[in-house]
Length: 454
Image (cartoon, rainbow, N blue to C red; front, side, top):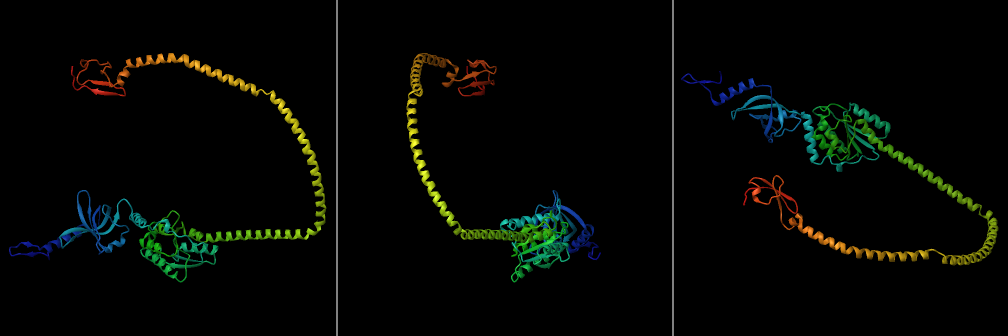
């Protein structure tokens, strides 16, 4: 054994370093490439980028370290209290002589690492306000220049270009080629957004589309990276996210100004507004032409009336003479009619006076007056004859109320009843511990006898 030393007495002696190295070799040979389940506690991440933490269960704990070089495979952010599975091997930290797990991979228990990372980033960016509706900008009404960040060989770009060319042939499109899948995709997508924004200083873009076709959560993951979300949020160009299928949602969708369910839908949403604009222009053109035709017909009608005015002048003079004669005849007829109406009114007034003398209303009024006087006399007699019996009844009721048990209770007295429901008149009728009911003027009490005084 190369690390051992032998003394004069023939004993094998190890230095601390030698013993630590032997233990380290044995542990690393025995506990290599193993999975360990536990809960994270005492998590620390210094400026070096390494993760130091304790992995524990309800009975034991062990130190663990995840070095920075292994964090590139980590899709989520470890937190205290999180249940995880770690893969690695046991090693010895020689300066302190302690053993620990050197973690190479880490997965959350109960939930996929990608899903957990998605939720963590969504919560983080949501708290920063990157999803607020107030940040969203509308797409230009009539876009002239369009930027696209996507794979140059993907079906998404072919679908976009086909629809854009069919609907809007004169739209200028600039494509930034970027990987949309794999470890380098997020960096290239973010760079593409930044490059197009720099180009927009000289050649403005109306909208920027970030697109890719459908795929699994792993395939779409670059659009869930924080770098892409930050680039979209910082873009001076309105951004439309068109990633995956209609059921797929990414962080890019939440940050973007507009989400399109598919790349094809993105193209239709961009150019659809031009079609609407052209329809409105056509409608306004039709209204303008109709208004012009109406005014033209009106002017022609006025010209025709002026041209025929002289021809009607003679006819108009004859009509005026006949109109004057009609007025004179109407005046004579009105005079005779007024005189006839005056005679009829006088005759009608004479008939009304004669009829008024014979009206029954006056007789009915006198009868009603007599009836009212008789009714008043009857009511007075009724009050006079009933007053004495009512006063006698009140006196009897007062005497009866004075003798009533309720009246006694109302003066502050009470009635006590035995458990058998018998009215108590003496303390000797109950024993200590008996339940007694006490009736008061308002309500009752249920009591128990604690002491009895004869």
